[in-house]
Length: 333
Image 1: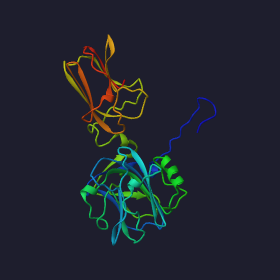
Image 2: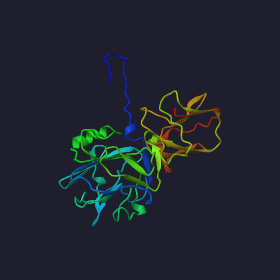
Image 3: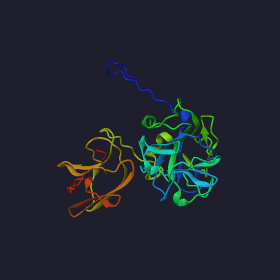
Image 4: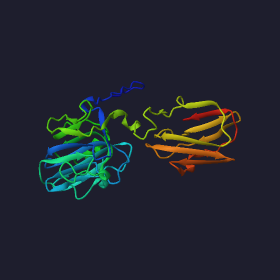
């Protein structure tokens, strides 16, 4: 809500506690998955899920539906976008299956022709491809991903409805649409998801996977430097890290693990200043955002080199090392 005069703006945060507060972390192994057994999909449907996909096995599937006589009745690959939350929709009606990532049609999620439209009492599995109903998983087909919720509606959404839902980001189920099931997680009962619609079967969480607070997950990726966490610099001049005074060795290598987010228009992740030269050593952050990057900077005999994930990356260069001592080393400014 915003009043119509300056300086009086109120933001109302919409609680998600009734729609799940945790995400199940599937590590990409065949022993850990989520399953609804004895499940028959509606005649028309929309699948809506919130996923955080990680690099994992070479041929992953995030969702599969198998019935007697057809273990590939419905099979979908995960989104190609890694290490950020994605809203996925899959709609089916009258023989047509359509796949969406963040509200946009995305046929890279499709495997085969879509839903086979027949059979009942099958198994819906998240994180695996089924080679038989409810089983037959293979490690190279497991998905490394986190699941915040899974909603299944008894109607096929039009593309405008899909786009509108995706724009919400994290969302409770649409109250205006018929629900076949709406599964969320809070970790209170680690072996199952909760169906808040009252219409679906029990959703079993198999293999004791980890749970993480959903609201914090994008900054707690398993590829972080350690379980102790990382310093989050938010892109303001009042927050930074500093070593002062600091003198470099005659030759050196800087090694850092960095998770860069969109921020200011002209950022620098590291600087070294001395009294006679405030740009003695200055580096821009990696251009790759929203995933952990290992950065190296080497200096020897007047030559400075910059690397991202082991490959030379001169986009990090603003100025090399000027060779002076006794200055201040600052991260984030």
